[in-house]
Length: 282
View 1: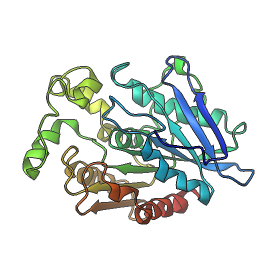
View 2: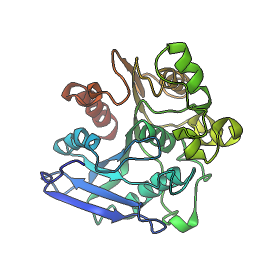
View 3: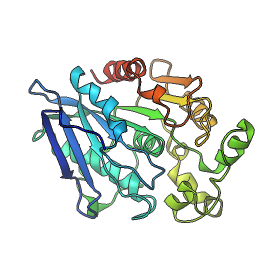
View 4: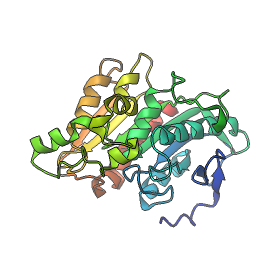
């Protein structure tokens, strides 16, 4: 777990819905300023099965506090508790909650970026592409009067095309092609072997929802990722090019980087991420 004691202004374990104890978030505010602050919403990874909003991968994103961002780290229902679409519904509900409570916590609900790695990358992308659809709306979760749209997306090595992952792993010659297995994270997330529920896979991947007016995207992926093949992000980038111009879409393959590689969290790379976010939220 990350030591967040150095952040002076914070609100921890704040519920954003009431269906599950998992539906909580942490809010970190810059040390100085009245706000309202643009929001960097961080979504943890873990194959939709494990992970925590306060894991060590949060720490690099807390560097945004010094640049005038608020950081909101979101917990969501994992697959052992609730299968798809629960996680998507939860992160969308968290965005709506931020807008509903923005004045109380000095947040700017008109400037929200979604950031995540691995499964969190998938959920960040889903936030980016589903802002205009009611497909995941659930009255029980609350705050449906508020939009779940985000204004920017940072996607690190997110799986976005579950049914082609094994094929791509075999092409690359690295990793184990086991995503089609009943025990795979993707199958557990959907509640069935992914090959047996292709329509559900389509609903859990972003391509179904692409449309004009998408927010800016910054995508990064390692070229030797053995878990989520780099082709996943290459294909997403190619698809997004039909909707976003070069000033709205950045894509970088990081040489020699594996899944969750420390190369993503270096000071140099975080500076690229923060530059992108400042360009589109300030």
